[in-house]
Length: 377
Image (cartoon, rainbow, N blue to C red; front, top):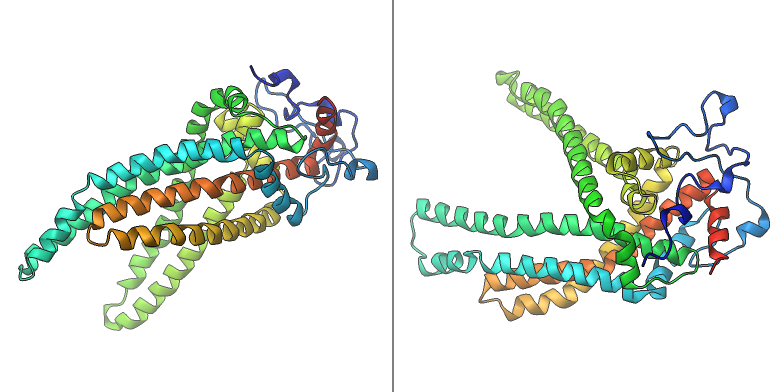
């Protein structure tokens, strides 16, 4: 049975915590010519500006974070506190889903003919150049097909898990601990919308990357072959343009990543659809691009270091132990890598969820509603 229904959901952006609030600098007021409720899809509730924080409210901490604008320290401490406060759900849900992905990945690698390819190369040291090229092409194809499918599956699993874990974090913010069954009961209806959101954001990211690549590739080709008599100058110009293109592509993808960061969280907690979640995420991060990007980079570095250390501890013995069976070693290493990502994913999911909470506290005064909800414990 759900712990609360949609009407009682404190995360609804139509909640009344700021009905009579004065606007903050982050939220335009009707007097400025822009309605405070300017974001409102058809049939959706509207939100209003954030209230000013009282000192008493700023010191309130019913759960894993203080209900005020969050610092980097608050985000990090709160992320690990979310995992510690409910390890059964945070780790349990992640391990269940990522174990399924790991098994599928392992089987996909085991079924690939990689061992046969390596055996062919080892048993035929005097093969011709054409045979060697064919064998290498077969090896590349085997490795690609065995890795791409599981990678796509893992990508979708991570997005969906991030959304589902968000629910547990949202309860921890107000000092409540939810069970695995309650988490699933309250989020199972969001799985298909999360898949739809993942497809939409993937398409959007691909389109941005394709447009940037097209913009730079055409002049790149023209510049490289514009002056056959001075090939060196053409190559230098093409190289400079290529570097600029790579920089612009990374900048564009970073921008998209920040603007879409909280879309899965919005979809789960606010009950919005995929398109509305994208619009809502875009608006919530408006004016907070650089702080959000810096926070994303920080947690990316932290989880990357943790993942690399855990991965090396587990995968090196596996690789060495099955050195004579490269196909099996690849299968086990891939599976171990997925399981390791499942162990660190709860921390990153909690961190992203708290970024969402921080944005709403800063822009919409969500703290008041959360304090009221925490008092109902």
